[in-house]
Length: 79
Image (cartoon, rainbow, N blue to C red; front, side, top):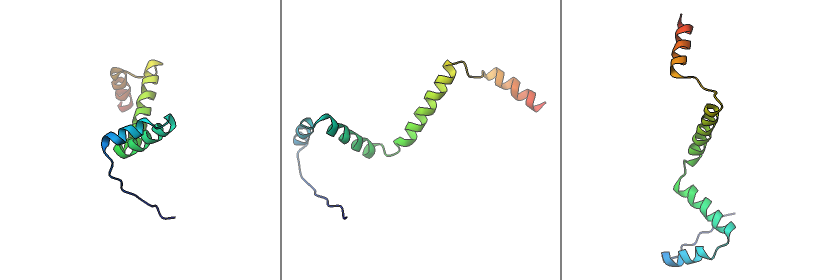
C-alpha cells in the first residue's frame, strides 16, 4: 500500500494547542516519534548507557581492579 502524505500549513501556536488536547498515550507516541527524528543514533547511546550502568554496578559490588593491581598482573604475565 502506498503511503499518502499531506502537507498542512499550521501555526506553531495551533500545533501547541492541538498537542495539549492529546491524551497521554498519544503524547507518548508523539514523544517517541520526535525522539527518533531528533536523535536517530540514540540506539548507540542506549547501549552505551547500559554498559555504563553495568560497570557502575560492578564497581559498587567491589568487582573491579585498581590500576596498580592491573600493572602488577600485567607485569607478571610478561615475566
